[in-house]
Length: 202
Ligand code: ATP
Image 1 (cartoon, helix red, strand yellow):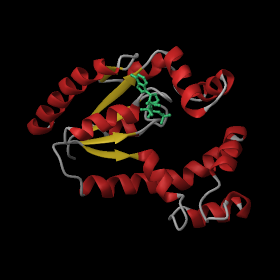
Image 2 (cartoon, helix red, strand yellow):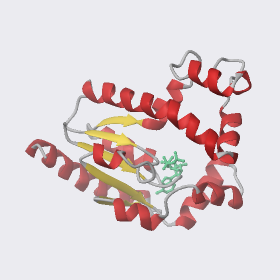
Image 3 (spheres, helix red, strand yellow):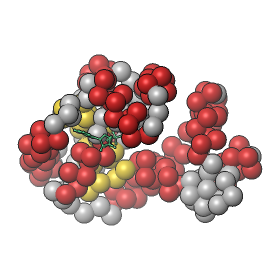
Image 4 (cartoon, protein in one colour):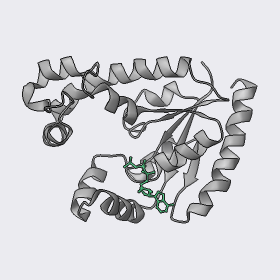
């Protein structure tokens, strides 16, 4: 398969910020969160299965998945979480493959928030890039952006891999610990590396 990078990181680590910087340099971006969102929009191809398996209570009046309700349900119930994933993951996978086929640019970047947690993604990409961020900064950014309490953000972080687990899975690490100006040279260096690896056909 063509050279691809799996970009991951904890909630609020800066994945979207960093991914957009690679896209600005010409990398083809494929964002699994965006795909999951599209699948669960009104008329989205995951909606019939969600309606059948979860019931009309989980469909908003627009016809989209009721995200707040689903978030609460899967947070409280691991079995419900597994059922939702069984619907979404195969659809996300095939949509990723479709988009990767038609992607332009020197290489592909898949943005996968739970890459380290979800097993087979690691084998499907040529290289794993972790956006690394101290937990304290993750907390502050997400509290600020989403208007959540520290306890709420910590509860989400507790469902994700730890910083150490993520770093152990990384081929490349991009440190996003505050200064936005520090990102540019790191992205530049990695983009050059990925272009040369893609060119070499690794
Ligand atoms: P999520 O997993 O929640 O989707 P993410 O990993 O994609 O998050 P971003 O959305 O890129 O992270 O960043 C989280 C928030 O932190 C955003 O509001 C972003 O503007 C801000 N942010 C990211 N990097 C920095 C930085 N170096 N300095 C200050 N703010 C930053």
